[in-house]
Length: 92
Image (cartoon, rainbow, N blue to C red; front, side, top):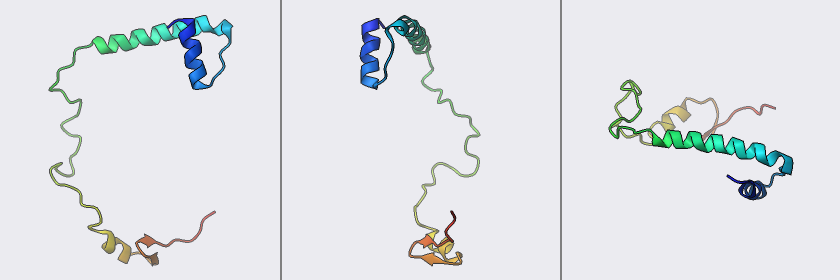
């Protein structure tokens, strides 16, 4: 990035950058963008998902979660309730 692009980015970000700092920001952005290019150049096997086979040991992902199935059962156990909410004392 050149100094004009950095000034435009600072303007869009609504931050003030002194002219004396522009060269340092240019060097910083050069390093950051170089690192991003390095990451993008790595070839990744499309079959690899990055997940461990032990990510979810409690249930199978084929079982869809249904919202509200146990709501009434849980609310019936609460000492006080108002409609579909558990009523608690105010804590400040």
